[in-house]
Length: 114
Picture 1 (cartoon, one colour):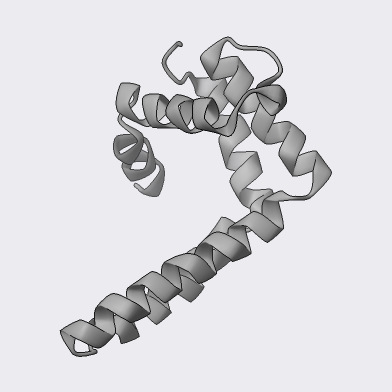
Picture 2: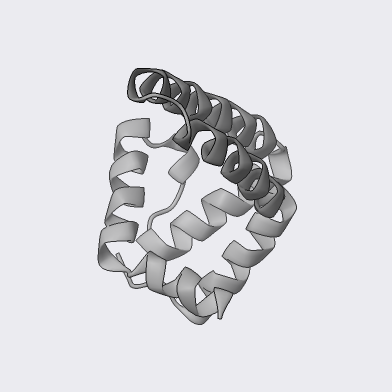
């Protein structure tokens, strides 16, 4: 598995734009701010519910066939594997975790924000 390169960043940026991730971020940031004001017990439950809601919304968006292909292309380029779509989901999850471990993703986003 290689480190993320500049071309990957542009692919990822196009993908995030198509997914409309900024709108998700704004929506869930506002909901998260409201949750922070809740008592602890309610906050734990509300946080879980928000996580599930966010996951479902993103999942529904990425089921577009073209977005799905872009995701496979990005992952295949970084991992050096072929046919990501056909591998076990456990392996794909481990691949994604490794990508995050091997690359300072937060630094990339911080630089992009600046």
